[in-house]
Amino acid sequence: MSYTSSSPDGLPPVQMNNLKRAHAPLQAELKAAAARVIDSGWTILGPEVEAFEQAWASQAGAAFCVGVASGSDALQLALRALDIGPGDAVLTVANAGGYATQAILAIGARPLFVDIDGDSLLLDLEALRAALSPGVRALVVTHLYGRMAAMPDILALCRAAGVPVIEDAAQAHGAAWEGRPAGGWGDLSCFSFYPTKNLGALGDGGAVCCSDPALATRLRQLRQYGWQPKYHVQLPGGMNSRLDEMQAAFLRVLLPSLEAANTARRQVADRYLAVLGSLPGGTRPVRPAAALDVAHLFVLRHPDRDGLRARLLARGIQSDVHYPCADHLQPGFARRVAQLGQAPLPPAGALPHTESACAGILSLPCHPWLETGEVARVSDALREAWQ
Ligand SMILES: *Cc1c(COP(=O)(O)O)cnc(C)c1O
Image (cartoon, rainbow, N blue to C red; front, side, top):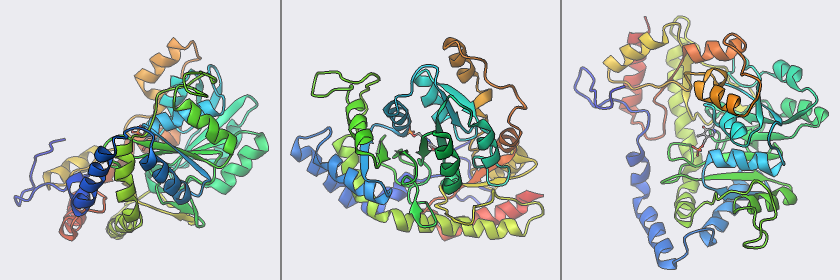
């Protein structure tokens, strides 16, 4: 994918993301926040982190928020907080970028993949019901592309089976199901503040939210070597994974704009949706009716995905694929599973809806900083390139 390619009319390409534009309106506040941290001389786990944790817990509808170094660490810490370890079986989907699988394998646990629903591309409830066998220690459910999975049904199934639920809400800041926010449903929820997420820092960051005070205490210990008190390691599985003061200060500046940014993303998505509706066979994954979409990504399906991408690029429109390779078919995961002495991952064909999605999806530029003219260019190019 050429970053510098320009469209036939000489305009710069429409980009998947543009962080310079994202930060420009808040530049003065961001610089003031950085100066505040530098002047304070306090860099790790201090007042900025505490203030952000409180604000984020309330945004996510949870009692507690524990700031950590990344979304990937958040997933690992959530699993460790539930005392999940080597050999334990954890359910997840295989079409969500591999982050949950990576965390499960990092702690030596065993990922068991549940197929997705072919229309929503989210966890399939019947497949979940079938997968909830005795011995399953947790479910990691991803709210993919900005849409929440059906948490009331998922929780009902998992509660009946005695299986705790971890939400991966790294693509769902501000999303909701019947008004209740992503992150406030499961036993634990994980967020990433990677710069291109709906709420992104100016570097890496993440958080785990929960409403059980005992879990929150464990998380605070686990993110700092398992210490309690300082220098005394009480818990197995401790890590160094802390949110720093600088990133927390930036996040406090950016948080008040989240809702407006989400609205802007939805408006872009609505424009593309209108275009798709007029194209033969144009489909976008179906959004569950109860879900408030925060349009983290605008994903659509096309029978000739790679051809469409090439034709879009020729018209100056970037695109991407989220994600091209299902987790059970990733060579690095297969090798990790072998290292751990686990049974091999399922073969190609084992997760038909997941695999067919990976082969046919593409993502269009969908972010709050697209100009109206750029959204129109993407829309026109989509019509011309569709065939
Ligand atoms: C980005 C992302 C993560 C990982 O977050 P990092 O901060 O990059 O480690 C986890 N899950 C999902 C669904 C993501 O989109």
